[in-house]
Amino acid sequence: MKKSIKLSALLATLLLTGNAFAANEGYANNQTGSPVVKNAYGECWRLPTTYDKARDGLVECGDREAVKAAPAPAPAAKPAPAPVVVAPKVQTVFKTVSLSAEGLFGFNSAQIVAGNQQLETLVSSLKADKLLKSVAVEGHTDYLGSEKYNQALSEKRANAVKDYFVAAGVPADKVTAVGKGESEAKLTAECTAKKFKKRADLIACLASDRRFDVTVETAKEVQQ
Image (cartoon, rainbow, N blue to C red; front, side, top):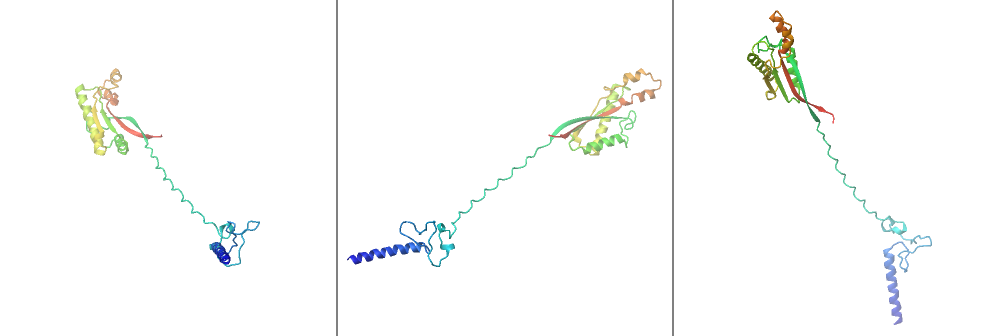
């Protein structure tokens, strides 16, 4: 009976030792709870067996590297902010050009004489203006003749200039025309005071009153 008990205990011990050995192949094991026997320097006792250290070795014995956790994925790049588009600031500009009727219209005529360089230059400027808003043409006469006649003449001349602009390519919806007659004549007093004996001299003195004023409304971009 005692022999059977001792034999069973021996078999159990051998089974536990075999399991421990199998679990830590190539290393000396003890029964104190530590799976591997270590010396006073903390080094593992290795058995003279052949085994693959890189695969079956223990990390604690320095024979195999611990499995490293996969690196965390890099954070997704933030989308680049949309570029800020600053609309240019536009400032309204008015400019008035005063052109003499001499050389453009015959005396007492509303028929434009071709080839007037001042008018051609103005037309080119208007057509090239991408920010053009409006063009206002005002016709003026001197005081000679009746007020009614001068009013009608100034309107005809203003409309003749407007039609010229439109025919040259300036948008029709941006051009207006008005006749002022002799209401804004500036040289009446000065020229009559000179008491010219010849009418031709008086007409020449009043030349600047026979004019048309072109007021252009446009815009320009200014720095922010």
